[in-house]
Amino acid sequence: MAVETTREGWPFSHVDRVRFGDLDAMRHLNNVAFLGFFESARIAYIQSLIERYSPVDPERAVGLIFAEAHINYRSPGLFDEEVRTFIRPRALKRSSFRAEFLMTSDTDGRTLAEGWGALVGYDYVADKATPIAEAIAAALRASGGEAEPEL
Image (cartoon, rainbow, N blue to C red; front, side, top):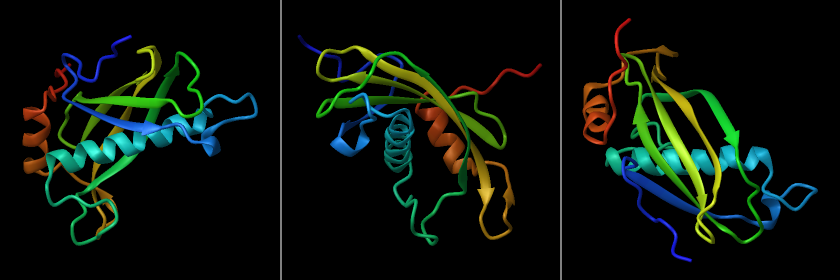
């Protein structure tokens, strides 16, 4: 069976493999591991947008902090399966945006999980929320990020 490695409306994907240590007692991908796979994908996505970005180097860190996560589990992940996580930006605001994700199995194409995480502009020196830098906002818009409509 051919599986989708690209998807319309999803500008980026990242692949991880389910390791033995990612499994729960029922031999399925542990719920917590889904968040780890999403984290790896969103870091890789930001790195693809912002060349100088490094999540561990304060000199190259971009002021974004992970604030919230929502996950809808659809199907269990299995040992040694390749999991593709598609990422797209949504609900771009002055100080935050949502990174939506869709996790699928590269083995058979089934949906494993879907959801989103909120990222907030953050000044690590001042230790407070801040507007998203224009260079980051422009890269998100170029990658399909849409401003959230005003109420």
